[in-house]
Amino acid sequence: GVAAGAVIGILLVRSQKRISIGPIPVQDLLDPEIRDKHIDWNQQVHSLSRESAALEVGGIEEPTYVVPGYYRVRELLQEPRMSSNPYADERLIALNTMAKPRHAVVAKLLNRFYRYRDIRRISDEFLKTAETLCEPCLSGDRLDVMTWARRVHMSNTLKVLLGPPRAARRTALIDPLIQFNDDMVKLVAPLGGVGLPCPPLFSAATPRMLYHLCLALPDTLRFLQRAGLAGLEITRPDLTLGRGRQGSGVWRFPELLQQVPKYFMLLMDLFDESPTPNQEDAATCPIEALKFAVTAGEVTLAEALVTIVQLMVNMTSANAIGNLVHRLATEKSPECKDAELEAFVSEVLRLDAPLQRNPRRVTEPISMGTTTLPAGAQVLLLLGAANTDPVVFPDPTAFQPGRLAPEDQGVTFGAGPHYCLGASLVKLEMREVARLLLRDFDRLEVQENRRVRDVDV
Image (cartoon, rainbow, N blue to C red; front, side):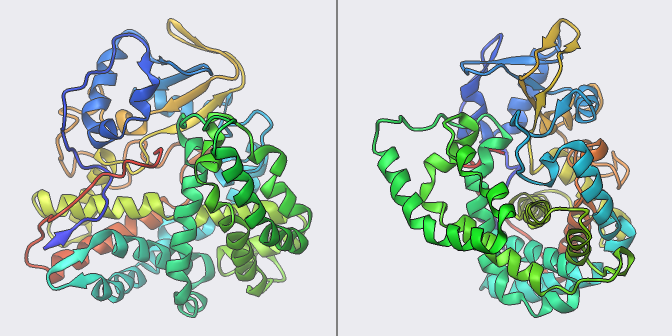
């Protein structure tokens, strides 16, 4: 039997709550129960968007819109009048939010390590990883899918980032890195959606925040001493403690602030112990390429560190594996052949996109039919809804492997310059996980599952 500890993509219909006619209530974007039944909600949004390509969100201070249509989402993912950085000051957050010229430099540096043909060369390693990590997650005939999925993806991430030989010496870091990742996601998750309001300033939340800031101070100072100006560029205390919705994770989970400097110091350890190649082409893995670029002055240390953070993001990829296992247990199993496995994986990624929405900030007014998106507005591109657009996908909520080419998952991984760098890694590790389960288990059955309801994805 298989028990999925937490799976994105499960449809649990608990009530018949209807979204309001007209502006979409902000509560719909925050309601855990709607996240439980996101496929139904996405279809309701499509029914509302017949008159307007962009729907305004009501009940929120900042102008905010959602866009569900497949073609519009693809278009806006590549729209030059939009920024992937939610902040107008373009502060450094991650690779995918860097200003376009800086993103282009870093992406060009790393692309050769994440191409399909390069990842495919080590896909046998992914199968071995899944085999090795499966046994500790088994209890009788019960598999803790999500613990296994998190470990599988983090292990594979290290294999790519550091190279398999060095990653093999760092297996003790897998669980700590997973915990660091989960903590960072809680702190920054509001950047991916609308975020809850910060707690009232004159409440117990403020002394609680000050208390945890004091606890985090010693490690923060050690990180700043070690990283110098790069540390200031990353931590930005003048901006981090803002009271907007997008920064509400810091106010709601201040106890996690201590984890930030500890995480970055661990990443600096990995960075510093990596050899520095004498030329870019001599780099054998992404971290070596980043180290060469920092030494050569092409990339700043701060840019390198936040890029490593993004390369190691674990939650959405692990949830993609969880979705896969759920579908293997509830749908007709594919043949254990590459083509069939890849078609199955593609349909899982289309229907159960582990990231349901992608935020953009409008930098110049954009006309969309009868709607004009004003400069400064936030636009949530509904990736999950785009993947079930009835205009593009007949019978969109049906699970039909083979409806897409294996290399196409709709807009699950984005489009254009910000297309997900790790897409091939995720697809190939999902394929190998499916191969292992179909090969080694006679029957898969979901004993328990729950939707990820507490993270703004």
